Length: 108
Image 1: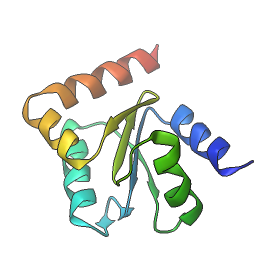
Image 2: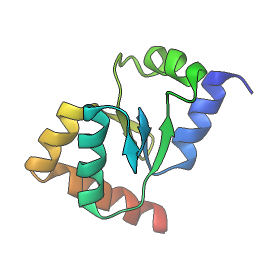
Image 3: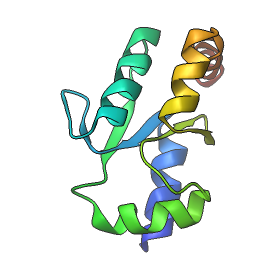
Protein backbone atom coordinates (compact mmCIF):
# COMPACT_ATOMS: atom_id res chain seq x y z
CA UNK A 1 0.00 0.00 0.00
CA UNK A 2 1.45 3.38 -0.92
CA UNK A 3 1.34 6.42 1.35
CA UNK A 4 -1.68 8.06 -0.30
CA UNK A 5 -3.68 4.81 -0.02
CA UNK A 6 -2.67 4.61 3.63
CA UNK A 7 -3.89 8.18 4.22
CA UNK A 8 -7.19 7.49 2.40
CA UNK A 9 -7.74 4.37 4.52
CA UNK A 10 -7.04 6.24 7.76
CA UNK A 11 -9.51 8.98 6.81
CA UNK A 12 -12.14 6.48 5.65
CA UNK A 13 -11.85 4.26 8.74
CA UNK A 14 -11.97 7.00 11.40
CA UNK A 15 -14.98 9.27 11.83
CA UNK A 16 -12.88 11.84 13.68
CA UNK A 17 -9.17 11.91 12.87
CA UNK A 18 -6.48 14.41 13.68
CA UNK A 19 -3.06 14.43 12.13
CA UNK A 20 -0.90 16.07 14.75
CA UNK A 21 2.58 16.44 16.20
CA UNK A 22 2.82 14.08 19.14
CA UNK A 23 -0.16 12.36 20.71
CA UNK A 24 -3.23 13.59 22.61
CA UNK A 25 -1.60 12.88 25.99
CA UNK A 26 1.65 14.57 25.01
CA UNK A 27 1.33 16.97 22.06
CA UNK A 28 4.64 18.14 20.61
CA UNK A 29 3.47 21.60 19.57
CA UNK A 30 1.14 24.25 20.92
CA UNK A 31 -1.18 24.13 17.92
CA UNK A 32 -1.67 20.38 18.26
CA UNK A 33 -2.26 20.83 22.01
CA UNK A 34 -4.98 23.44 21.41
CA UNK A 35 -6.65 21.31 18.74
CA UNK A 36 -6.71 18.26 21.03
CA UNK A 37 -8.23 20.33 23.87
CA UNK A 38 -10.95 21.55 21.50
CA UNK A 39 -11.71 18.01 20.31
CA UNK A 40 -11.69 16.65 23.85
CA UNK A 41 -14.21 19.32 24.86
CA UNK A 42 -16.65 17.85 22.32
CA UNK A 43 -16.67 14.59 24.29
CA UNK A 44 -16.32 12.06 21.47
CA UNK A 45 -13.51 9.60 20.88
CA UNK A 46 -11.13 10.50 18.10
CA UNK A 47 -8.22 8.87 16.35
CA UNK A 48 -4.87 10.49 15.77
CA UNK A 49 -1.74 10.02 13.70
CA UNK A 50 1.55 11.35 15.03
CA UNK A 51 3.18 12.83 11.94
CA UNK A 52 6.52 13.05 13.74
CA UNK A 53 6.61 9.24 13.81
CA UNK A 54 5.20 8.94 10.28
CA UNK A 55 7.49 10.96 8.04
CA UNK A 56 5.92 9.55 4.87
CA UNK A 57 2.50 10.87 5.92
CA UNK A 58 4.03 14.17 7.07
CA UNK A 59 5.40 14.65 3.55
CA UNK A 60 2.44 13.38 1.50
CA UNK A 61 -0.61 14.58 3.45
CA UNK A 62 -0.18 18.31 2.72
CA UNK A 63 -0.14 17.51 -1.01
CA UNK A 64 -3.11 15.15 -0.78
CA UNK A 65 -5.17 17.51 1.37
CA UNK A 66 -4.00 20.71 -0.31
CA UNK A 67 -3.43 21.97 3.24
CA UNK A 68 0.17 22.82 4.17
CA UNK A 69 0.14 22.78 7.97
CA UNK A 70 -0.53 20.55 10.96
CA UNK A 71 -2.63 19.73 12.83
CA UNK A 72 -5.26 18.67 10.32
CA UNK A 73 -8.71 17.64 11.48
CA UNK A 74 -10.79 15.29 9.32
CA UNK A 75 -14.42 14.56 10.21
CA UNK A 76 -16.46 12.00 8.29
CA UNK A 77 -13.98 11.98 5.42
CA UNK A 78 -13.81 15.76 5.03
CA UNK A 79 -10.91 18.06 5.86
CA UNK A 80 -12.10 20.61 8.40
CA UNK A 81 -8.86 22.53 8.74
CA UNK A 82 -6.14 23.40 11.18
CA UNK A 83 -5.90 24.83 14.66
CA UNK A 84 -7.36 28.30 14.03
CA UNK A 85 -10.39 26.88 12.20
CA UNK A 86 -10.93 24.22 14.89
CA UNK A 87 -10.83 26.88 17.65
CA UNK A 88 -13.12 29.24 15.73
CA UNK A 89 -15.63 26.42 15.18
CA UNK A 90 -15.43 25.45 18.86
CA UNK A 91 -16.13 28.99 20.02
CA UNK A 92 -19.16 29.44 17.77
CA UNK A 93 -20.60 25.98 18.50
CA UNK A 94 -20.08 24.53 15.01
CA UNK A 95 -17.43 21.98 16.00
CA UNK A 96 -19.66 20.28 18.56
CA UNK A 97 -22.56 20.13 16.08
CA UNK A 98 -20.36 18.79 13.27
CA UNK A 99 -18.83 16.07 15.43
CA UNK A 100 -22.14 15.08 17.00
CA UNK A 101 -23.79 14.84 13.58
CA UNK A 102 -20.93 12.72 12.16
CA UNK A 103 -20.99 10.34 15.11
CA UNK A 104 -24.77 9.90 14.96
CA UNK A 105 -24.67 9.37 11.18
CA UNK A 106 -22.06 6.64 11.48
CA UNK A 107 -23.77 4.79 14.34
CA UNK A 108 -26.71 3.92 12.11
